[in-house]
Image (cartoon, rainbow, N blue to C red; front, side, top):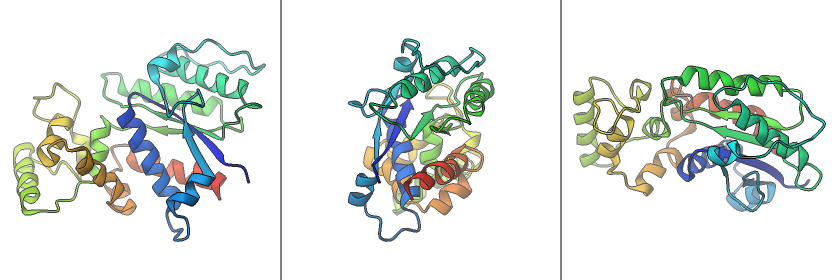
Length: 243
């Protein structure tokens, strides 16, 4: 079986990283025999350009229209045009660089969050008959909410920090991260601020939140942040084509 090709569209490297590593965890779930080395032989992550690790939304929006003989009309709002251009290019490249799935990662941190989400869902729905699988990763409000979903204090200092954040916010920022927002960094409910208070913004500590916390916990806590929906979509679409 040839190695499967997964394309990532994300705002920044950090967004691409969390989507990629969470997906890999789901692919390995309940498969004790599937180590990282074997998984690398089964799938590859890249951008629209096969030499890149992901494609930014800014880059996607600048892609020229690709003629494929394939035509799908979508409402030209929010991210729909950029997403459709990505699909057009991947289809045009299919013979030279076949793609099995594309993952669109987009923070729902704008006032138009619901409309932005709907625009991507329309693209996925209108293209559901193509062989290319489409997976949406839509953190509400930002990726930091997904990281907080996985935070579990591992020291007395972190326990104190979590207690202080619960008192400051009036709720647990890990189990109720959907109540946080993307307002300026010093705003009361800013997700980045809450995460900084708990992890000190240390990259390795943040990564442990999605790398080490059980997928069952992430699913439970991520019901309203979009995390569970993403993990379920990976299981439905990506796990099937790597089995």
